[in-house]
Image (cartoon, helix red, strand yellow):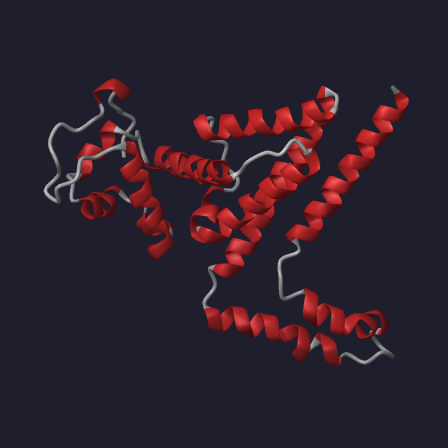
Length: 237
């Protein structure tokens, strides 16, 4: 795509495409997200996207300056999908745990897109809403502003990193995933105690635990540390 884009007020296409659909930013993003999950990053081209939409590729310039602009919109849509399903309860720790798990689940639902977008800063509506919401939860819980930002940063980076990590594993062919999972039992569980005493002592736990994501445990550790920090701050005031 090029660096030209039509102002928002003039974007809507007046007539349907040859496939009978009216283009919109939402439709383009949804179609691009589907193509990425089906074909990978190489699917994010103007030609392929235009073909999937039944539209002239040049018409996409009315909505996005270039493919990176579209990628940012996709990243923002993933954030929006998480926020739409989340309902706060007023318990800051439970609310952030629920939100983190939803972020992780959202990444696994769109693993290829999650890997591509996890490190991006969109500056778009859903991301802004997420930043405002999470900081609000932390500040209302009693975290001073510097601590609220510190916990926010760790919370978001942890969720995005685990989402990308686990999504990359999910995107592997099933045979490759199964082969890697089997290594814990085929190799680690058979190491002798005289040469690898700590692995041997914990082998059955490694076999059971390493097959699943450690994100829920890592999230609990983070939130537990944040709660301990908040309690310390409240004792001092």
